[in-house]
Length: 98
Image (cartoon, rainbow, N blue to C red; front, side, top):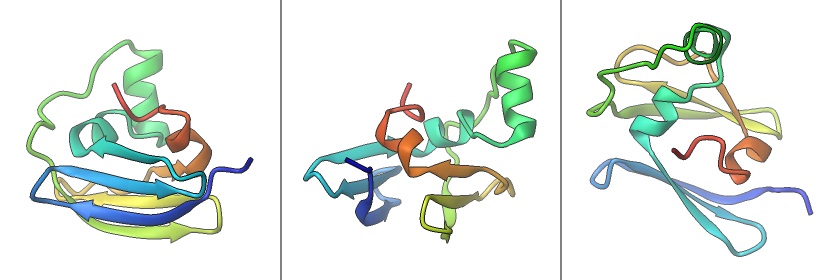
């Protein structure tokens, strides 16, 4: 079964993003985890290749969410970062939850 979001909710009062999936499952993603585990090339270089962790993102907020085709979303954070594409498969598989 392909992971397809039915509803995506930005919940700033809880500091999280919630997604209802087509199989009835709801998954919660903390803003900090989404930012620290950003899938863009710059962030992946810092966290995977260099063994460094992106720090100081405990209070980051999401300012904008937009679709990227039929397979992902792009999230813009209040620290100005917004280049990562978060694929539905990666999100469903838990790659952005620590």
